[in-house]
Image (cartoon, rainbow, N blue to C red; front, side, top):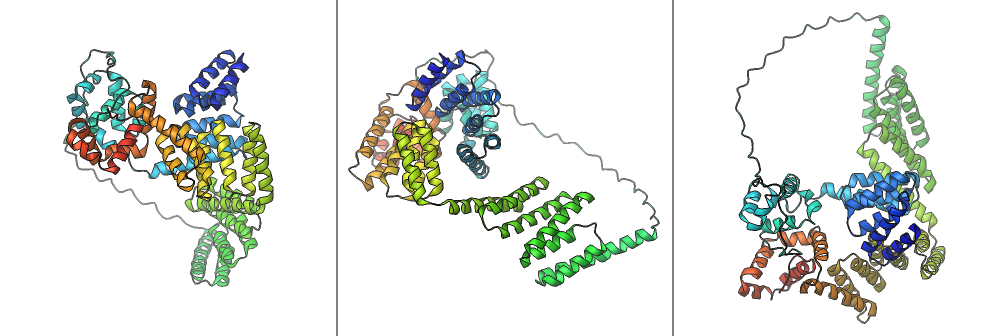
Length: 582
């Protein structure tokens, strides 16, 4: 019975009916609650509907039931990524790669998570941040008769306080229609809700509307003048033995030799620099900087073997002396650099990469991290050059085509991936793999392949049909429409592109006519409010005035309809379900 429900869920998932897939997988789970694959499949279905919290819960259950299954960590990473929990996503993908180091989806997911994390750190503040700042927010919500009622509901007040404290949390509450209504009030834009005439949720408490606490006033307090600490008596100098005096003298001489070596190194007098560093080592073998400095000179001279020997000695001696971990990391980094210089094939980069990784465990230095990334990239590029074989790539692509015809999509993906390793510049293979990913419901991967296909050959019409299809399944109808139109510029009579345009127009018109169900409208609005383009339109003062004119000033609205740029933005808001033309 569980297998039958699972099969129905898989079929629904492949057809794009994710809600039905969730129901079938849930039925299967009720019959077989310890089957990790069922939770994994349901997590993928939730993620396809952008219900990432539910997807995360199922992914965690998958990992709990089967901690040594790499796909569970792929689901976990995707859910964290959907929730913008980038560090957790990176950790999940890395955990999966520990189990299966060659898993391509995990590698791709890790790259996406790292890129998203980097972008998030450099991204500007939430564009709606100003709307939620200060006491003006509460005054405007209180002044509006609709939102005034919401202020009597503790859960709504808590959400608004959370958003005011951190505007980036707005995305967590976009499906709550009260929050959508509040955004409309704060931005002076009327946002249509799925049920305009629905009853307002009753307050769970008759308590009056809570208002934000006023900022605390600073209390002046006269500070007593700090007492000056009494000077501590300096310790009397200790008597040094002859041996200690000699050691101290040798250390001072060694430092002078090191300074002389540094001066010679800057002048590129490398032989003289080596002489001084070697002399310093003879005088004092308890400072590994003399070894690392001499290694740097050998590196400049191209004497990589000697450089590596000095670095190994520095690490060994440093551990004996319990030297600063930064010094040990420096020695390992120099060794890794020498190994990179000696590399002649992709496998030669392995010891260098391992050495850089060891250096980073000692001290996470940005320069070392950069060298590690460069070494990994150089290894990958060299592997591709060594592996490049267009003839074998064509053979693998044909094998993939055969499996695709048999509807064995995972097997087809495997052969298309191997084909791309043999020839990463063939747009046809990216197009074919995008079609496979679409059949498997892996829309982000399919979109990435379709875009790569177009990047490699902007005149390849099939790339536009693939990209448009993925965007349509992701319910990004306006973007799909633009993609299909771009393809028609290359082939005006292409029936596949024309059919795609027809489907997109049909879906967009549903929003224009108000034919969307409340659930569809809620989902479309929540998705749209996360789109930077929609956010920019709603934040644009000119567009906000245009929307007000459409509601209150028909004559001005008539003038706006003559502006193609304005109407294009209005159409985007209509497609997103934010506004409706009557």
